[in-house]
Image (tube, rainbow, N blue to C red; front, side, top):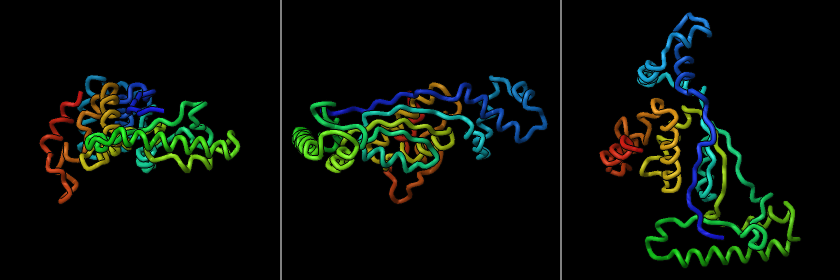
Length: 243
């Protein structure tokens, strides 16, 4: 067992996502046949068309394109936040079917919050994780040492810090919403780091769809009201220049 770090891979996305969005949107306002739609919007004009679309808040065409991410190095605490976004599909590593014994799998990996490291308690925290691993191993042995009936009860000892792996598929509209709320400074640090990395990767394959993506304050006033972080200028600059 060891400390785990965030790792995100964009596994797959809809080919030519901006072309699909432009065609879907054009269909709503055109008498053209499906075969003719593609001819009506040249690739060089897609960016302007998408910009007009978002200005009109006509966002349903964005639902036709999807992005699938492989995510590891996040805590169970973080994954519980992710799956609250219901307009998405999830497949997560099971603690019922995948044992976390130190002898067979090397034990569970874990996430160390930066706040704990900042106060100089990382070693203390790591020691507690190893204690939990010992208790887990003891309980697995007491419960029969194998099978889902063993792991489904032994997992009750595992902490929120335990690392998990998950595959996530979101359409572009939901992904923009996810980024808007989870990249905010008031979001929990772990899911904020995740959302920012997801944004960084989708901008590589769909730069126009995600050109202005970021927390709510990037293109508007801060939606947090009195709870604002007070760093709107800094946040805007960071996301406008996100590599």
